[in-house]
Image (cartoon, rainbow, N blue to C red):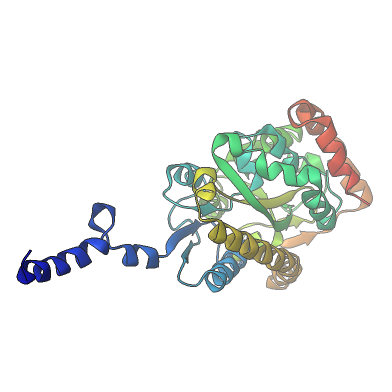
Length: 337
């Protein structure tokens, strides 16, 4: 073979060696970061918003050049009615829905919607860190989902556009916005109220226009969404918990390179600890700010008042014990001290 032919082949061979399947250069492909779209429905300044931004910071620091985390708050990509479908379709890689959203994937997670199950957030935390609580992260894997962590929001308070909110009879006949949850629907019907399923992003306007009379939420959610400006009374009921599960597509997660999956898991653990501490701080701060705003009156409940609410909601636990499991409920109750 002539020297000129050999010379002519060299550039071709060099080009071929740098090209992978489909004509994409191997070097360029190796340097392309894995894009992780993290979608959620609340504001950046909430505990969930801050925890997701902390996860982005930590993940990109632990895996420089390997991952790029894009956070989309306030239902910018998908509302809470569509985000689960988007995750399963691969349109996003991580979401952090309220635990109420998982009842169609496993009935066991309905445990978090049961009223007056946990005495305080410390009890919630103990249960979520227990073997029984951790098992719930894997309980949705048969449906193509993988739970990564529990993120706190806080205990729920009840609010209405009425002047009185002390006993269950004060909500009889009123319309309350709820998340799409069979347990929450049963809870309000047990009190003689009318539950209305509604996306989180629609709640302020519904309260403002009187489409619904009230809602249940944490102090931080009420303050960040300005619900206190369109409600007259907020009862400090602490009757339930709003927490989230950070969830991903199980096939996508299992298909990640081991070092990337390990780095993301470490970032998630640190972001969870950071966000859960913030949740407590934010709720204490925002309760104070709501009181200072003077728009809605904070109604303190007596022990007798709370006992009346507990009694009204007792049938809810009995109705769902079979679906959730008496053993799981007992494990949750054991977390109270």
